[in-house]
Length: 206
Image 1 (cartoon, rainbow, N blue to C red):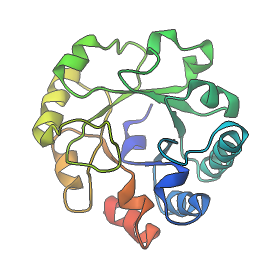
Image 2: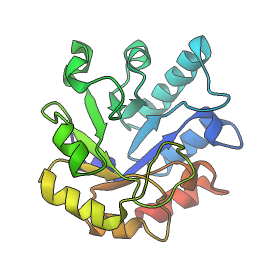
Image 3: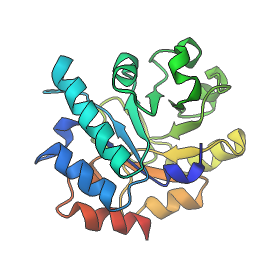
């Protein structure tokens, strides 16, 4: 994959926004988001046919704007809607057990620190997500922060493997992530809950 695809990585689910999620997602895509991940978790999360329909709509929007569409950890959903890739956590299905569908797809893996790196098989991984860099309220299971020092240390250990920073990133601290080894930064609330989505996206691309 092209590491530049990670530059502005928007993660969102139907319950992360205060208005129509599809409108928010399309606005973000139209203004410069470079990768999108559907992360449908928590209270009120869509399930079954409603989730499949929602994911299919997002895939269409991503195709319209030529942005890779990634699904978070729901492997059957990713296959069902023809997603461009999957992002897995340390406690999700192992990368090595994915079906042949993912042979030519983007595979992302969350790798927080040196311990998780040692336990991870990165042979089929296209990028890693590292963090939380800063405190975050968007993920209940995010764990303790690693700071930009953690990003720098991970970069030294993984070489040129693409890496996106995750967790608590906003307009005031995103540049420090890019300066300390991250190819890109990912957001949930900084875009999903922005009063002006287009302006928020453009601010992170400046």
